[in-house]
Image (tube, rainbow, N blue to C red; front, top):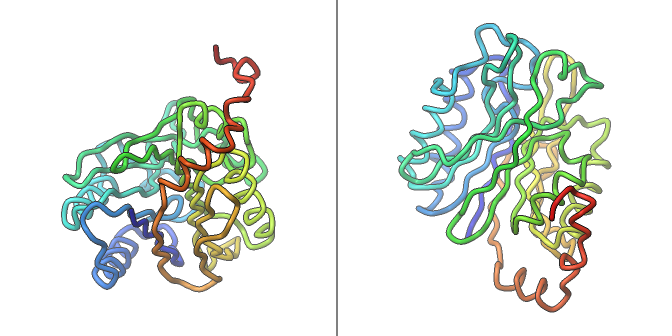
Length: 260
């Protein structure tokens, strides 16, 4: 099982330019049918607070673009988009598609980044979401969600084996990014793939540091601060054997999460 993460400098608020760039990268990468391809948060516009002209309905051009790539390459595909929410707020989404281009599900970021003003422009999501990738239980999350371990715990209780954290995480706190990804992998005995952008927008610089961490806390593969593609293979047999050998998740106090 192979996953591909695309790390790039997002063209600011320019969907056509990002569509062209993403397609060019995939043409060079040539993922195999059944692989999983993952893009950063707000993949085609950047971490903008503007909704007018950028936020979309659920059947919008960004989702159609992702669906088309999933069909063309026969892959599972996860990317970020801005949807319209309530009260003219946006919703910061992670969209997952299967190889025939059908939408598997859409996750709305549960924790808009209030420190950066996101909560004034984007509506928080409430629901958890996971999908099946060739027998692997996968849960997408978005950027600031990484700081809230209870979110990961709820998904661990549902059997998540691979967390995808798509992000526009700033360079100023890259050491937090690296440390928290590792912590979430170790405490949930799961793979964690953090897919971050690089480059800069009009306000913030981004460090890249896209990385895949295994259930033991080992960094399987990582990128630096330049554009690139991470491709790595998951060993689900090892993950499941490790959980059986050291069943720490069985000791989870479900009542603390409001679970029976």
